[in-house]
Length: 265
Length: 281
Image (cartoon, rainbow over all chains, first blue to last red; front, top):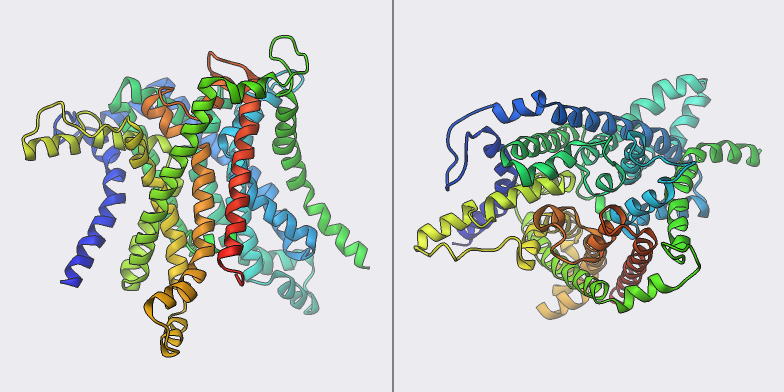
């Protein structure tokens, strides 16, 4: 009896996540869905993303922005994680804590309005450009890149390893090539995947800073939810695929999102 | 020697600090300063802040935001703790499946969630149709996803997984031998919970609660996709004063500063509480 109850609860908990995730996927392959069950099979709504210029350009902008945000975050976070791992001083710890708490105190809506206020007038008229959207996404994704990179620097104990390699006669290039990069890469990849997935789906800050020129896929989705649920279903399904693929890749890399919350203390 | 070593590493921090200063700290300070100036005349004024606390629309927004964030965090905290507890009491194979599934919503766009729940719980959504057909109810009976209760249900799809991942980790860390030791020393169930389990769980639970609450105070994407500006929240007000027809940046700034203060105060209080509940942790 207890086991049965356990099974029922387990199935219910799985369905709680699975059913909402599957809605856009089922909808996107159906010809129409008015009643309880969807009817027919079609790929027309996916075709619309590629064929319609507005949707297609939004897809391209989204991909550009996501790659841009990943690169920007990597350029900032990897050197910072390297340095902070070595600087085990009070300043280093303080900076580490600050970068964890910052996104809590300044949620996307605040970041969005602050960016608009700072960069919408000459000489710094950046809002409405793809660059501004990349910066905004990099700001939101930064903690994920930083946390994962720092964690991998810490778990391999980069300092000791580097010193050992140096004492065996390895120069800086060799240390980078054979010690640091291969050990840190999985953490960086997990961070990159998270930043990519978050950027592809980001709506809140984007809607504030993007203007008309930097229309991303979620902004299109926002309009289509009002206009045409079928197009909206294909865009939503695409975003679900990105999330699921990201997650599978992360599992493959051995990255864990859960348990991660513990080091927030 | 020490200084040379240290200086090289500080150089690596330059991109990080520079980026943060220019694109986060400067915009925030700029916003805070501009919130003290009039939108039209450009004169120094406290009017934007006076508005926040006297105009009915803003007062309602603050009240709604506090209530809504509290409701969502509570649902998330209770539901998440339950899922975390279940996850820590099943075999590792099922646990990994469950926790993997529950980490998916964290990267999912809020608009996708909005879409899913319109299909599921909209006026003629699948679940509403199903329930009406099974119980033979008239068309006027439905669960309204566009109401406050509906929005809480939608956000639970985010909040419960977020809390579940935190709590599962904590339940798994809870040392069973500690519980057994307490039992052996003659503690009853109440005492075990009061002196062993709760002090171990509380810090993580409160940390999870802070994250939930802070997140909910700023959330607006899914709300906007579901009901537009119909529901009056502080975050929605900031959005509308920044990018819609009610464009008034200093007012948006004043509202944003208010929101930052509310979140900071709450995080501070919950942090204090954490030290009270478990002095050792």
